[in-house]
Image (cartoon, rainbow over all chains, first blue to last red; front, side, top):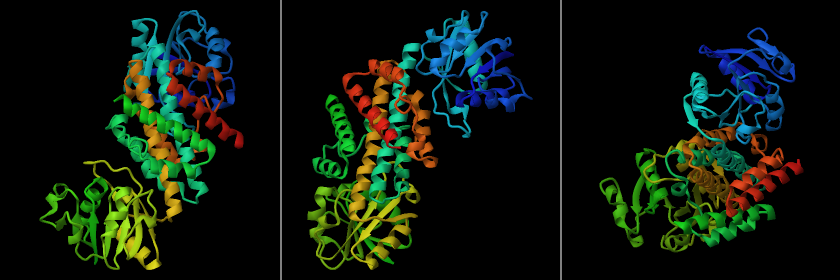
Length: 251
Length: 251
């Protein structure tokens, strides 16, 4: 049985702790959080600590801490253990432990309190050697099913792509909500369209799914929309419209 | 029983034809398409025509034609009938019939061949008087359940908002897919994140759902992402990042 320790008290750490605790194939031997109150509720189930000096022996240490904290926290983990971080943007080299290194990146947006279906989450794994990659794979398979080998360079590009499809998409929702609010239209009217837009991409490529005035170069509608928008919204509308049309030209 | 005629041979027209044909509360008396081949398969179920001169009597004529075609097509419908268009961007006044006017706008993105659940689609209704609005409401309720009274000004703003949450969001997916392709990462890795981003907005406001490097002003990650992107992607990344941060400041 693989012995693991989870380092972190935030969202990702708490979701990982919960699911690994429920998995019989893995032994969660310890959880660390700087603020012990965050993990106090675990004390009857596993060893908890707020001191990196008191870490006990484990096969894999999973660091679910902020990117900034990875070098310092990892440097405190002695011995030839496998230490992995869970960051999409930090490199493998940001780990400062003397032993083996790897990455255990879960490409999903975690919310506090919301149940996570780990079978739906892509696990992006990286390690310095095949044996450790295999170890991470076994670990990932104990809680999930979508497993990918993604190297540091790929992971960084994936993280940038994730910003577009998650953070920037959410900002498109925000602008939509702002426009609705300004014109006394309930935002809920847009909900089915938002859901359909996301579902469509399961079946079609983004190119095939693209519709709208930019795509068909409907200048009258474009001008009508611009009149309704404030300066900042106009700037975004024009730039994305141009970008959609440029993509069309390349075809 | 309300007698209706559907004018149009495209996506919206064919989905409306199908669902109204299946509804017992409404009598679909005729379908018109310029290209008769598009509606040939209906000939055993209802009257079909490709001549506006041969339109027969109906209580409501539903125009599901392009915005450009609305004035001309509507001008051919004589008598004091209710004529409605289904456009998000055309005004009520674009209807050129001498009789009564209204709007029957379905805020959803329709795809050919994909089944539509009309119960999930918002019907945005407008008419010149209460009686006609009531008539459109009865019509909408015979096939759907989400019914809103939206005037022309509100509808135009809603259409602009829809461009952000649908067309522009899809373009965010496109850029994500481009980045993946360039770095040999399968786009499917991003699918669960895309779905989660859309689902989250059912429960949270876009403000509350916003995460990412822009939101937390993580300059190191932002700079790392910019290095990975081409010029056009950079321009969009910077503008949306700035917009997310400006929204933050206003709080």
